[in-house]
Image (tube, rainbow, N blue to C red; front, side, top):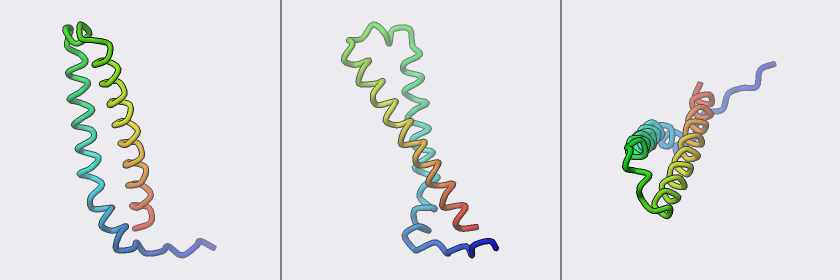
Length: 79
């Protein structure tokens, strides 16, 4: 027998409504940084700047992945 779906808590409902904006914001930040990194003069900057940007990009990509995964989980729970 299929387990009965539980209802989302108030906190989960709030999270579900906020996640699309969070995801959109992260996607926008990632796209902007990709544009900056695509400029030919970008790689003429110091190694520290390049490393910081790479680190920031990795962090945002991980946050985006986690946000999308959480959104999918909540959507599934919401039925």
